[in-house]
Length: 297
Image 1: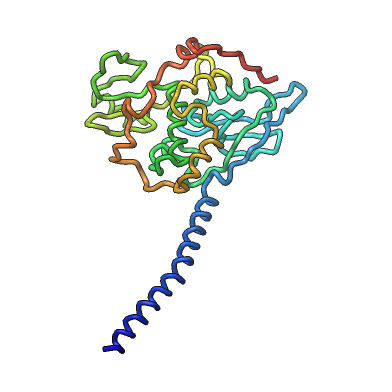
Image 2 (image 1 turned 135 degrees about the vertical axis):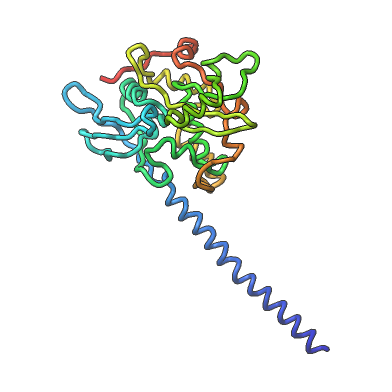
């Protein structure tokens, strides 16, 4: 009996010692895996550079392609001034986020940004590539850098596009300002034609974010100062990437949790989760103390 009791006590102590030895190794490997994920994340590869000026007239030394009106993020197509990689995605210009803007607006913002012009870029990867629709379709940990960046992108999209929905208008809502109210058949037609950058169903109604229209002569591109003033009206404000990174530090799980955001109610649009979009030029005229920006030389 005493021998059996001694064996049980010895076994328990050995098990306890085993747990003590194993736990630090497990914690260490977990910490290392978090560090590895962080290093692989696109935010660890962000480059910050100043845009060079070329020629005797001091032209901006980069050319830009893409844009939300083409279903893409803005990216560098040429860099005659050097120092910037062709093909890199442009995240910020002068500290203001440009993902989700039309090509014309990105160019307008660049040309009106005060000098010296500082930009943030990153090489396209599996998570953040040039495909705007693909990035918006992904599910990320709430509060992470990617989750907040998705909201910033939507706010930029709403400067030129009005969301559409199949639900009935509520009191005080104006068609073409708050939402474009469409039938289910019209919504499906928009979806099939590729006019929607994202779409989903929430509480029995369909919601979608249409692709912004191209800039035309009657609608001049937004300037740097106008864009900064307009984003102050939105929830995430004019958050720079640096501020998003600080918020994401609390939860490093900023890689996508799953593939697409299908059938996840929290990813769907409703007036409780998105800012009310307004036509951009009307909002500009109502912005208080809009200072004219210094144009590029």
